Length: 50
Image (spheres, helix red, strand yellow):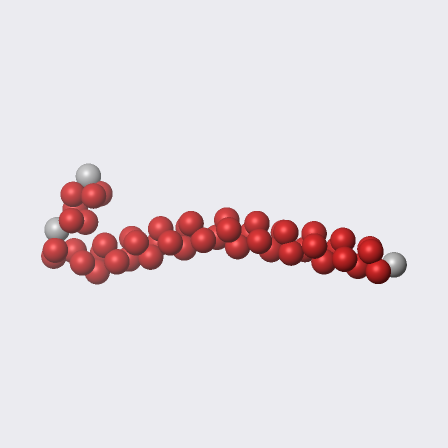
């Protein structure tokens, strides 16, 4: 149903908004995992120096 309504050329701005929302929702978990991996890396590197 969503796909049918978004394929209509009249709803171009709505389709762009939904696509942007999907990209943001997809990017957030990757950013969180990358941040956690960086934090673990920094902690391990500081422990090696001690």
